[in-house]
Length: 341
Image: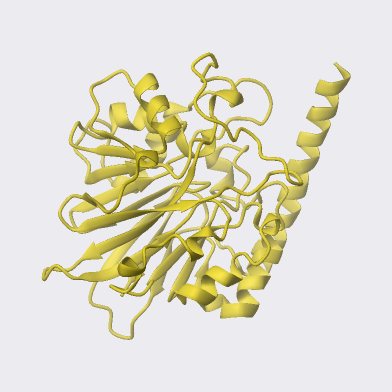
């Protein structure tokens, strides 16, 4: 009883602290409610739309094709059993895609950076209800087993990234190249739920959602002539292995237009994100995994609450000092970012 009471007090303290830090972030102008537009060229000829869920979740669309990465909207409380919130998922998916559940979407592929619940828990429901059997899923071995175990309908191909994959195509004009990454420790040098799939665990237990191997992605969009004309470098876990694990021949094809990187646990990785930014020189950065995902989506989409154990304000100040505030965006959860290029 004493341990549970202590955990409740700690949880309430962390939420209150996250509200104070979120207010500071907003007062400094680093985060603003609502949708965002970013202009990367003086005379833009095209655009890409991103819809930010929370944590590492993004819907990314160009023209008639889209991909979904780490979609997460359920946001269960930090204590006790966890379960998906289908109403919240449907609500965010509708605003992201513009269509209702059961109507054909533009989603060609669903990706997962790793298998922790804040990256994967909503994927099985989405695979069952928001895409069809032509949409494939890609994640580590653990993520693939979880998705197969938790879906009830016939779903598309499940790609095991641990088996070794080069480039993959989503639709006709989106190419995805996986990047081998690592997940930072949560507390000191301790990683939580780092292991592989445990068939004896239950999905309402956090220990079910073992992370497995972590991946990032190079996402390339092709023009009408078959050449890469927009590139996203994306990782949803803080780390620097992306400095060495991006295939050189891929990097020679196009520079990084947009970099998507998380704030969560950034102080656990020395040199992050400065070394990534210095190597790839992105035209713009979108910061994800910065908000407190223990609060309901309708709360954090209206008022900024920062993630626990991370000084997001310091992360923003660091980016401001290194590249200037006009070159990065911290989106509110459940909002759109239109990138014009």
